Amino acid sequence: MTTPATAEIRKTALNAIHRSLGAKMVNFCGWDMPLEYSGILAEHLATRARAGLFDVSHMGEIEIRGPHALDLVQWVTCNDAAKLAPGQAHYSGLMTESGTFVDDLLVHTISDERYLLCVNAGNQDRDFAHIARHNRFGAEIENAGARYSQLALQGPRALQILERLAPEAPIAPGALRYYHFTFGRVSGAECLIARTGYTGEDGFELYFDPEYSEKLWNDLLRAGEPMGMIPCGLGARNTLRLEAGMCLYGHELDETTTPWEAGLAWICKLEKGPFLGSDALARQKEQGVERKLAGFEMLDRRIARDGYTVSVAGCEAGRVTSGGPAPFLKKNIGMAYVPPVSSALGTQMEIGIRGEPVPARVVPLPFYKRPR
Image 1 (spheres, rainbow, N blue to C red):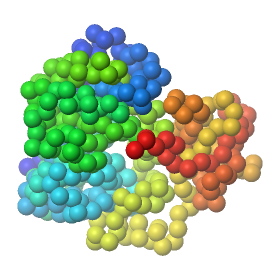
Image 2 (image 1 turned 30 degrees about the vertical axis):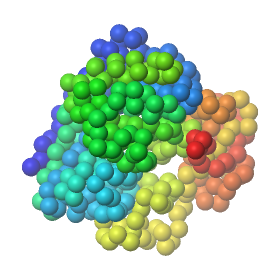
Image 3 (image 1 turned 120 degrees about the horizontal axis):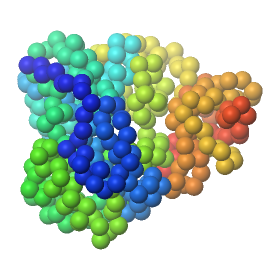
Image 4 (image 1 turned 30 degrees about the horizontal axis):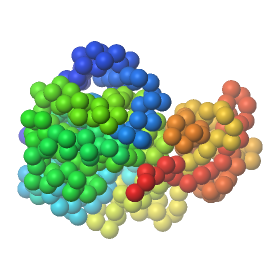
């Protein structure tokens, strides 16, 4: 069975709540979403120091079910889902025949015959069509986004806040390891509770029926208020992921980039056997890449924005894929694809800002690592 998704402009079940809180709303990938509430800087720092609550219900969900569900997941993604036990998830790539990214995604193994894929909002329908086109195994595929809301509770106090709602689950949230999940009731809602996130902090992502959205959001905010948690929008989500050196589809990843180029060799498992693009990726691994993703920091106060030119020794070497302030680190940072020789740590480069070359240097990724 295949069930196509609609492509109309959408609102999450929390749209009225966001507006009542005074959020600045923007059209993001066809969704009316909160960009910020109290300000991107305040929301970023709250998530690093305490906790932030994000409505990420715009993210897409695709379910793959049946006796050959694993075969399909293995064929269309580059990581090795066969190594996941039920209750485990991993980060992976949805691949083209050329070994490039249709999307990046999370794969959750619910059982040997049921997988939940969390995909990017703007790619959900295209991802679904791509998977369906390559479903030579007869697996059941559902474009299931309409059945899910998703909240991301992120930050060093996320566990304490979630525990205040006394989740009823076979595995307590505190016992979940990173990239593991369980099912349980939180504030009356049956949730998939995953210890995952896109901020560089500890935290949880909760998947549940949209009818519980307002109650769960409000209960989480009340539980988190004494600990300094605040609602956060897409602006802080982006600055947090950049500071943590995480790739964003359409910036660091797209149908022209491969895992080797993006520094994501760890999610590309050629040894698992053939998958879409594996032959092309094997060739590139043997021949070497012509560009690599590098992180850089600015050497003055100016900001490198997406799309600005990157030059090394006076020659254009690439363009900024993501750039901006790092509020917690108190510096300006960015990422760019450059020739491998220009990706070495300490390499001096110039970012073209309003026609002027501004100095920067290559630094390790990620820029920020949370304390353990």
